[in-house]
Length: 78
Image (cartoon, rainbow, N blue to C red; front, side):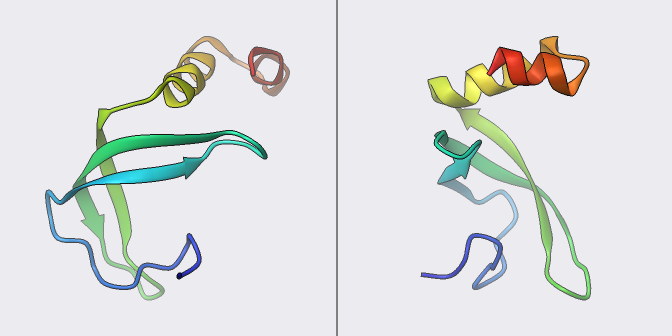
């Protein structure tokens, strides 16, 4: 298996997939997302995704980010 930061082949535009996201040392989210944009660079492509379906861990993370203004507030929200 390739490291998380390495893409084996370019992702097709609008491709949807189930993705595991490491949100913290012990927190993982599993989401369904679709490729919405690709930026090609010298190192490797960078992708933007539209989240189509999120689990509880993802939703809690987004909620904490939306209501926190400082690192301390974010740490306390986690």
